[in-house]
Amino acid sequence: NWGEKRKGYHAITRSSELFFRSVCLFLLLCTRPCNLPLNYVCTTQHCFDHEKLVRFTLSVRKNYHKVPYHNWWHAFNVAHCMYRMLDHEQEIFTELERQALIIACICHDLDHRGYTNQFMVKYETALASLYSTSVMEQHHFNQTVTILQQDGHNIFDHLTSDVYKQVLGYIRHYILATDLAQFFSNHKQVTRFCADQTFNIENTYHRNKLQAIMMSACDLSACAKTWPVQKKTVEIIYEEFYAQGDLEKKKGGVPLPMMDRDNAHNLPKEQVNFLRIFCEPLYGTLAVIFPHLSPLLENTKDNIHKWDNLAHGRP
Ligand SMILES: O=c1ccn(-c2cccc(OC(F)(F)F)c2)nc1-c1nc(Cl)[nH]c1-c1ccccc1
Ligand SMILES: [Zn+2]
Figure: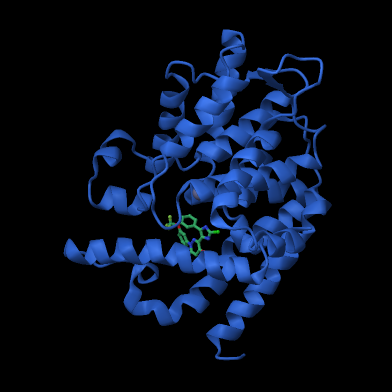
């Protein structure tokens, strides 16, 4: 379960962590049927060329910056969460959707510099001049395509051109769904389908909205892990937020209170709000559709309780 796995995990040293990551990543993506040559790793229908998969994965890892939070380790955790989420639901999504979901997770924050979309737009960065909405998420997708187009990196080049376009369309939709600004609309749609019991997994629109909130759920999954992981991860996230706030002050701007280290005493209250506004509704809806995900909701509720105790000076 989510709790036990996590406790054991901390015992792993840094170096074996790296080994753990790369081994798991290949286990995440595919299992190779024994009757296929060694250089292929396959899921049931679509085979990845092993060498291309290694080259692609290492290039993806190289294109994450060493920022406090939005780094390779975050991308790996998000992909691991999606793998565990799909592990129980193999039959409802197609092979192509499952591959696209995992690849989208590992690529969803490619080339993140540790600054938010709001910051990129406010300070008129080059990327903000390229995209009018979801600036970083569109860049993350663009980076994904750029890596796929490098020699020997195209893990999808065995697909027909129509299926290739389809899988890239999936990946683009999934990565753009990780823009928190899209969360409320996506979540509201899925909640409405559940409330009026019209949710139909065969309906493409319903399917897309469910997959969008699954991406959010994996992206925010540190909010739904046990308290030690949530607390440690939030410290790292706020290290990145405060670095952005410091830069904003240096530019003569006024950062959001959440990004201002002079407001660090408000962090527990901010966390209660964030978990209540985003995470509790998100994991609540997913637990209705996928009951095996209810531990994520329970952990989120427990984390809200612990942040609330801290916010009110209770032990
Ligand atoms: O713990 C948190 C507290 C507050 N916010 C937050 C609150 C409003 C806005 C916002 O987005 C933006 F910063 F981009 F404006 C983020 N995000 C988290 C968080 N927790 C996990 Cl796990 N992932 C994130 C996250 C971080 C950056 C970005 C997205 C998710
Ligand atoms: Zn992310």
